Image (cartoon, helix red, strand yellow):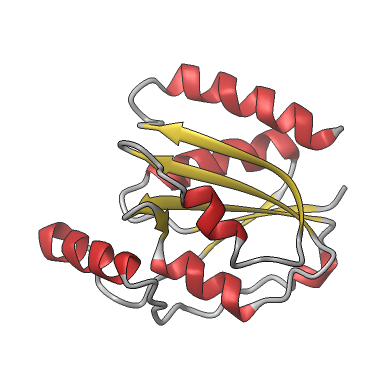
Length: 156
């Protein structure tokens, strides 16, 4: 199954997970770039504000054509109990009608409905799975084991 992993990462946690998933699935990978500066304390504050308001942001152009993939795995950090503004924007720019989509989330705390909020952004997708990872880089080996188990289910 031709697969792509699309992700946004502010601090590197989601990127770490995306790279592990792409490796497990033999997938291509594409990073969504938020053109708004999200670095440091002010970046963190603006990220939370934008997520709380369900706002989109300007993102860089992606290179891959999603129509050529059978499975799209989308990853985002959880911001204010929802997806990042960059992933919200990415999802709004693409049609996922009838497309197999799997979602993964990285967070430091409670996701409180982040998966449900993200699924509402892709109502016509065929959901293939979701993975929630708290502090994924704190214990990389444990995270890799969870990813391996999850990816095995996606391959079925």
